[in-house]
Image 1 (cartoon, rainbow, N blue to C red):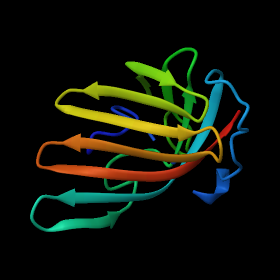
Image 2 (cartoon, rainbow, N blue to C red):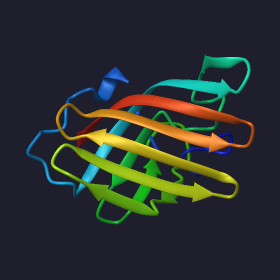
Image 3 (cartoon, rainbow, N blue to C red):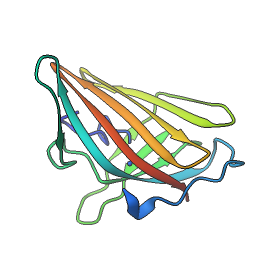
Image 4 (cartoon, rainbow, N blue to C red):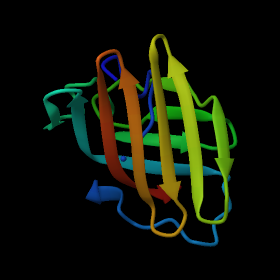
Length: 135
């Protein structure tokens, strides 16, 4: 999303690629690094873009208990966004939210820390890939 996945946030690069323990409960906080972002348009397909292009922090702290996302990049004023919905099973944490005309969702794997997410924003959508580790 162009305003910011942190402002509409979700979620996350090899610097934080340590996997989340499989036995971890869906609670507490996770630090996530966004490694890849793709902007997709209906007719032309997808192209890789930077987190700066969509005003998204490269690092995001996900606080499952407080239902909050917070930008964690250096040289940025931290921004927070409410997580509207959280659910989980023994393998994944599922998150979603909205901001203005945009919606977002993310899945954090409890088995290996993989993060996948998406943002729908007007005529385009964004696919996000990264990794998370429990804080």
